[in-house]
View (cartoon, rainbow, N blue to C red):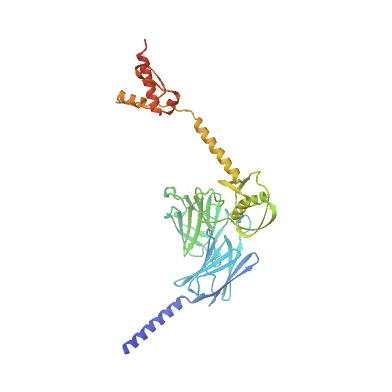
Length: 435
């Protein structure tokens, strides 16, 4: 019994020491998270057990749209790892504790700007929509920023290019610290990554030709532009990118998109992916609404003259490509997509047009001229060649020595090599009867 009591005391002391160590490692705790609409934006209030000395480092991902914050030496005291919000463009929250660190992830419907501020024991994250021309699908900007790092000089330590398991390009950039400000934007056919107030050593200021890796990326160029470092990534074909930061490493992944002619917005994700719109359209013209949705999706629309009528739609936060699909179902319409141009017409009209195009192609194939080719055969017996040429068909005329002259119908059904040898045999038979 004495030994047993000593064992319990030792175990209790061990557990207490472990608990004390864990408490030291996670000196703070996230106790509550509240979300409220704030004008056109959204305010997320994170209440902690102890006040923070500075705002936690944060980063955002463009596809899928997310914003994440890492709280060092902080535990998750919410009692759950996820929370559904559905407030404006903020869909849900994920709070995951790994060791002494807790990560808060804000899941968005599309990319948004954010700012942070500290107020006592609370951290406020204010989300705001990206306004202006940069809010288009091709020009949205992903921002990786930290308030406390403004004015500080940072450095790029290494740039590594790899091919992923599914053929995607993976560019990993090692940074001197987690507070490096990063802007990502699509410019023309290239992806621009701007490292704000950052420098790079001379051996990294170069252009990498990565064509032989067999990924969607052909080149990665790193240059110093004033106080910033600019990385220009040149992909080919259709592609999409994701970006994330883990500790001091920033990663951009670029995947190839296999074009689906039945989708208005190309991408690897399932379902509708267009920018979300709210519509209150009362007895309005269908053609005008289709043109408006095509502009929102960045597409050129050719609408058939047979598309007419009016429609009434009252929708809130619905993807633009889903709005187009709803109109198609209402009005019996369909589309054919070629690049960034869509042809919209009634389903029967498109089916009839495709049938006529198919029949026209078939007629062109039937009217193509017959091509003649000559072949030379060596070491062949004349009897075997004669059997090959004379073995099929009937109804043709005959010449001397039993040589048959086939009809035009039979000649057309012979292969090119058979026709060649038939002519040779016929000429030889004529030479026999020449005077």
